[in-house]
Amino acid sequence: MRKPFIAGNWKMHKTRSEAKELAGELVKQLKGVDQRVMIAPPFTALAEVGSVLADSSIVLGAQNMAVAEEGAHTGEVSPAMLKDCGVSIVILGHSERRHVYGETDELIHQKLLLALKHELEVILCLGETLDEREAGRAEEVVRRQLKSGLDDVDTDGLRRVTIAYEPVWAIGTGKTASPEDADQIHRMIRQEIARLYGDKAAENMLIQYGGSVKPNNIADLMAKENIDGALVGGASLKTETFVPIVNFNK
Ligand code: 13P
Image 1 (cartoon, rainbow, N blue to C red):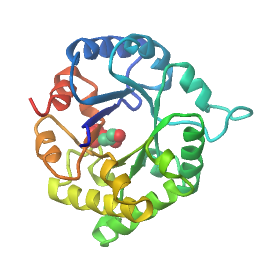
Image 2 (cartoon, helix red, strand yellow):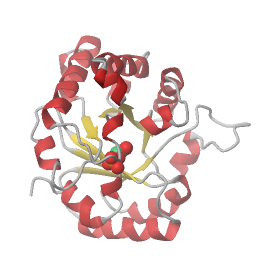
Image 3 (spheres, helix red, strand yellow):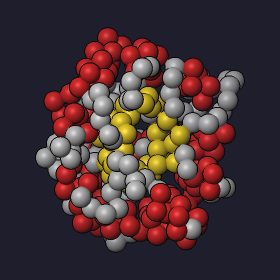
Image 4 (tube, rainbow, N blue to C red):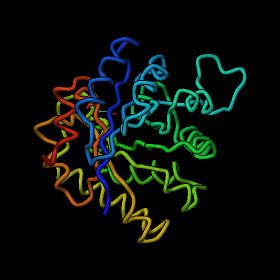
């Protein structure tokens, strides 16, 4: 049985004081929920939010990580620095990192290996663009990103990976993939995991959906067999929208 995992990616939103306030409210309002919940504030608010979450069940995520342990990497943040702020999960390969900042499959793969080496969990984001979908290449693109991201990862490492399928055309656009379309890609991902790691690993693999997840579409998405959670952007910035998403089954 896979436990639902709802994550909020705050992207480049919230100053330290705003982040602290939202995190504090979430701790209060989500006390005792069954779902696994993560929030990923911007780097500048990680330490602050980390202390707010310290005695709660909400876990602290980071939105990105350097591909190196330390050194001359202006503007980058290392795995040890993230852990020092209380981070236990890092989002890697988000479409904004891939498409706006030019991160390649290989770079994301190297980051993933480094994160696992430092005992961080990873949310590995995959997803096709609109052009790729319209050309009938969605599955091929997602399969390529998956295989490349997980190259050299053994079954032990895989246990610390969550996959997030986020079709690029659905992010921040208000267009959600239909639950059926999303589930089809999720099923393909699970089959690919079964082929690479066996049935047991595939059964345990958590696969989140991301892209315009809102309180009014979460229940239909979560009702699908292969959708185990959500990676939420815009709707994670307010308790009024994030709390009902976490409580989708109430
Ligand atoms: P939206 O929920 O704003 O579409 O963003 C999704 C996303 O990119 C989460 O990582």
